[in-house]
Length: 304
Length: 304
Image 1 (cartoon, rainbow over the protein chains, first blue to last red):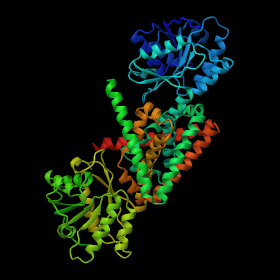
Image 2: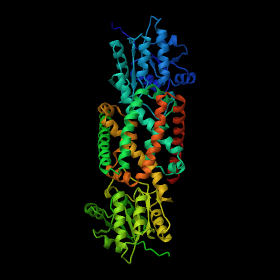
Image 3: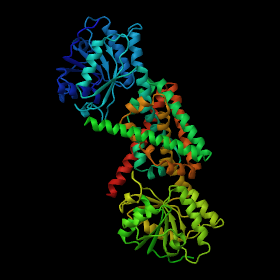
Image 4: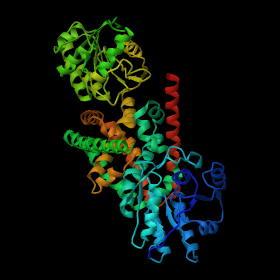
């Protein structure tokens, strides 16, 4: 049974870069009128209100849920899972249930929480999603109404979801200027593991290996721009990446193993001075990377 | 015995981005007056002459060596080794010997060639070096007199080198605006393996692993700017990197193994959901990377 959902009041649960940018974008597009902040850090909420990102905030989750048409969990991955569990526990004894969605980097752990709260059934009003957008900066102070313009938002609707709830979340993200794409939860987590979580782990592992080596002073002294670009993501927030690594454990382990196999092949080719094998691999990789870069440039061109 | 070396005529052996930029820079600084090109690709030489990068070119190595005061091997790593061997074979029966130097990415393989040509002794006039500079573009058409400004050039003088020859090569690079630093050959190759050769192998391995996976279409479809930056170096010239991988085999294998150990530790921590271990490693890596980035920014600031 499809329900008519409201959209006037949006609760942002966890007010940082993503939550703040979403509120700004929805206000700018007119998709919603009223924005309530909720979170564990009152300082961020107060700041968000000062900046006009949210209209008000509350530290009382029940009150926030009672008033919201849409509640968007914008907390970090593991906090998001705890929050979802908390929310679904409260809502089970409630008349009013807003549409619940989220912006976390991993979907499998949230799906598990939702299914378990629903006794194996997906709650109709819980639509999981992930905007592929970010910034070097963080916090509500860095939020921008433009953050999602021309970026992808992946939604992972599942059996049991209310079609009207899915449509509402899709419309919400579209109104921010994002391109909304549907994927299966497992596919989302595998793709994100490969393109984002694995590269972060590799960058952290590389920098840590070099920092621990005897020659680390010379190494960092002579490293140049290429190394800086390659290791930029090792400057990302360690807590966030610890959480993502744990939340997306299975897909990340598979990605690491896939990578390790290729690296072992390349190592063997270097060891054997196997000129042909090295050239073949480097050539194939260059072609794939050039093709990807051209695709991405095309996407950015056609978007602007 | 120290000899007085001339500097008027420079032979550029292998005329691409590096050789062309060196000739332009030395002409601009007035360090040398006459530039002769030599190489296997007549097209590049002809182009270099048209552009005024070199004054003339010759396909006769004996003639070039007879007229040059300084001969700079600017060919790719493995070609450079063959060229050095060829040159040292010719010079052994010659009265006139120019100072020979090079710009290749690996020094150990060239040192071996030089020592073996000298019967276990380093030829006094062979001073190995490596400018840490490059560009996304290649070829003599992309050469620039400014390429080396504020970049490092590593020289690896060894016992047996003539002090005057080392001084001449140092002065030559300084006149291009570069900062010249001395290192031991083994240290150079280890540092370059860690900061440049290993990252390239990792980027190639990552892109190739993903391109080979079943989900490769989705992976490249959803990869974004962070992935593009992380994999940029996988678009580098496969032939050049095959040669570097083979020329710097031992140091590269050691770097790969050092990295693999750290990655295995991180994999085990993910597998065990070892939150503490993950956070500790990511934290340590972020600190090292932030410190490196600050150092590099400081270096660039004080250089401009």
